[in-house]
Amino acid sequence: MLAALDEIAAAHGAPVATVALAWLAAQPTITAPIASARTVEQLPALLGVAGLTLTDAELARLTEASA
Image (cartoon, rainbow, N blue to C red; front, side, top):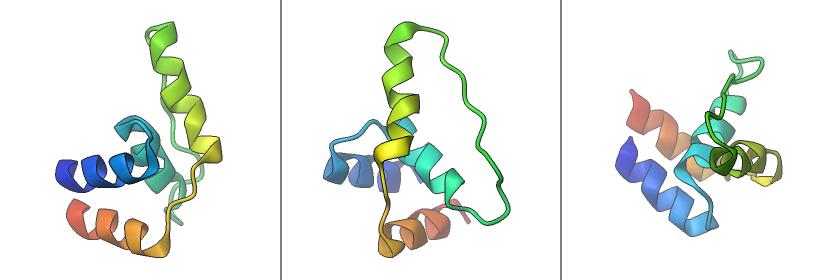
């Protein structure tokens, strides 16, 4: 899972946390992923999910990796 997250994050120039939250948000059984930042530096990664759209192939890869 971590290798898939790393690769997809690098392809989008996004933090791994942003990709993980985008993947969770795309799951039909999850209404809203819950995340919190302990520091101000962590906040951009959480907010970045609003601007990140993962492709169907990326979503499938992450779902397969999580199994």
